[in-house]
Image (cartoon, rainbow, N blue to C red):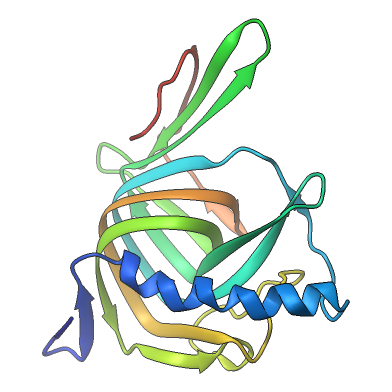
Amino acid sequence: MESLARGGTRWKRFAVVMVPSVAATAAIGVALSQGALAASFNVSGQQFKVTADRLDGKGFVQYGALDTQHGGKNIPVAVSAFKNAKIKGLCQSVVIPVPVFGDVSLKLQAGNGGKQVEAKNLFIDLDQLDADATFRGINIGVAAGDSTKGPGIKKGDKALPGSFAQEADSATLTDVKQTAWATSAGTFKLSGLSMKVSKGKNECF
């Protein structure tokens, strides 16, 4: 961890930041079993992979939550959220096993050739993330429900307001690789969108 002159914090591998957020989901599981939290929408049983050359985000918060698969299984995730984000070199892929036919891949790419992807109130439910990251004005250990820098806990998320979270005025991530269960945004503008379906495994990484 390195302090920067601009008052930021840099992590060579951003994955270390996720650990407390995911660990906080143990308390969320207890609250769910006691009926203290309402269920949100169910996610599919398919994870998807995402890569990006660069993400510049403003108004960042990260907190632990639980996603529920169709069928009721709970999955611990770290929710990374931005009020505004601009992404260059975005790739998203998912592999779907089809009985008899075999694997089918869906790959989406955008934000290349000088264009960029733009998102507002972006929420990413993920369980693995690797990147080089720089945070500016970061607070680690705030209560998720009291965060003021990011968009806050998404409505319907299974997260405890008093659980561990971290927030920052802004964040820059490069060489991003992640696996996620869900993504939602108020606005998601995909400039230069290209989508391809192919037989077999054709993933972003």
